[in-house]
Amino acid sequence: MTATDAGPAGALRIAPSILGADFGSLASAVREIDAETDWLHVDVMDGHFVPNVSIGPPVVESLRRYSPRFFDCHLMMTDPGRYLEAFKKAGADGCTVHVEVGGSASLINDARSLGLRVGLAANPDTPFEMVAPFLGDIDLLLLMTVFPGFGGQSFMSGVMTKVSEARREIDANQLDVDIEVDGGIDVVTAPVAVGAGANVLVAGSAIFSRPKPLDAARALREAARTGLR
Ligand code: DX5
Ligand code: ZN
Image (cartoon, rainbow, N blue to C red; front, side):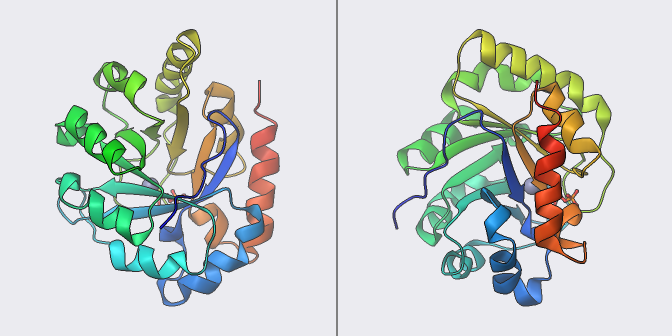
């Protein structure tokens, strides 16, 4: 499986979260929004790190046949290291692990060795200092704007201080690291997050719960552009 190119770090990207889609018709949901999709965000929940269970490598493998986009897999798992290879084989392009589970240095190394684009995620109450030491080793920093586990929650604007802090640090050191926000992103909150320094916007409900998901994704992109500095 050849990896899909993520595109240049720092560019504005819309990453629809399939967690917001109807799991009974994932393939058509993904195809329907393809024209407005930069990355496809795949939420993986293990029922341990978060109190919910979602999908795993077999679904990634099946979806791969229906989407040529960059598969951005968000591993909300206590032991992501056990599954990195399976996700890679299934067709994941990037995998993001949570800093809260520990062992970040070796997880980053393992993901890199497998040829994955590497992300590190932090929950809303995890301080920037926890992820700062790894900025030189990752491609993406995911700053959660809700506590992970469920779609449809409200955006936590307090996280924007951390987004700005991360943006300053990344720019000051000229690092090629994307800043992704995930949770409660819609046409109102997207420009706020982009204004603070985020460039990858994950959205589930704001796309898939709308009557016309493709139009909703387009509207989200247009709204996000208004936040560009
Ligand atoms: C939360 C997930 C998110 C979530 C986003 O645990 O990581 O990707 O599905 O959903 P919305 O956009 O509905 O907040
Ligand atoms: Zn996610």
